[in-house]
Image 1 (cartoon, rainbow, N blue to C red):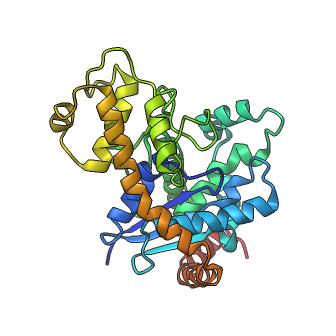
Image 2: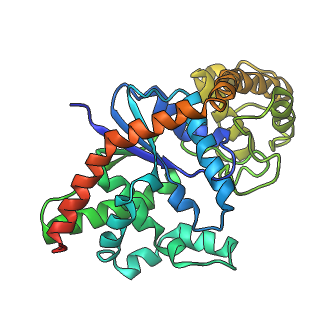
Length: 325
């Protein structure tokens, strides 16, 4: 049997190139190798206030975009987190087995609470328990993650190990999959921070829906330096980030990339062309899918039926082991 992979993505903001290169492109590339369960984690999204109708629409749009990116229903089961209530149910059991100190050390809570000082809620504090439940419910062998998500997976591993030791064998202990290239795509206008759906100005990210002209303008304005020399040098974060994007999209060697262009101008134009060439077929497929609500709803229902039993069995076992009737 194939080993199982689980990962999730929030339906907030617009999917951008960092999401695509750091996660989705690899999901698609490796989907025949594994048994894949991918989740739109809309319950995580409400730790920050969301307009209810917009959240529903964004969830549907994200589902369509992930299919447009190449997720194949023969190999990958994509579902919506809130349709399966075993997620918050298991999260409560895990909450009761995670020390306050361990949860207090989660760096993303500190970052997000500083950005949302008017809504520092309990869900924002303990959502790593829900994230752990997402992973552990499906007896996941592997979880594709970025460099900044190691801490969350480590918490999931820790609580699973403790639970198994205390109550009896229940959960698989998941291992991370971290891509060698593209795991951390940085902001175009501030290459010191990660490209994000929620941070930065209008030129900080490239959305998967951006037109060719918009992509060209954003790449032209992307932060580099005054050296005008192409070099994969982490001490020069602006050009290093752009070179890594080009590397991800072309699979060319670093030596070949460095020797292919005379300066930043030529390189930036080539990069913009490569990005649009990658995104154009995705945009065309998305335009078709977004009009097929009935087709999308059918896939949602079919995938939910396929994976619900996995979640139910895991939750019922955990529930029984801790003594709940």
